[in-house]
Image (tube, rainbow, N blue to C red; front, top):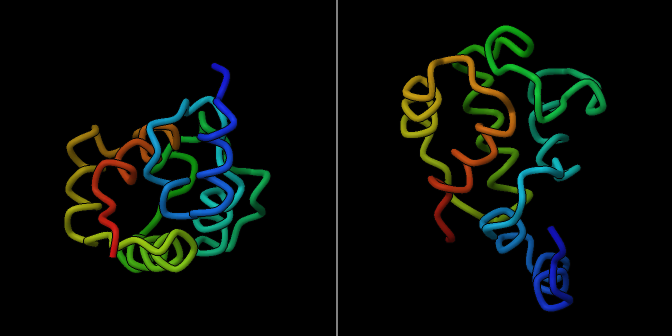
Length: 111
């Protein structure tokens, strides 16, 4: 999928738009990857779109909160921890990171 120059400009100039934009999930944003990796104490390159939330990363309750905080700080959005947990649970409890990215895009609210 080709992105228009306007979409690319918007994503670079506005981190909130970068997270919330309806862009292809074929690319895992390095900042999104880092937010998860930092909260879990992992190397960012170990997290891929195909990584499984529970079986590969196994975040606990505190990790959910820390991931949410990291994403909020990086992308200047608000992520409700309970809504985040519920959405992941409703996605089967072990969604791929691609699905988690879609969940975060859906539930993140601009400040």
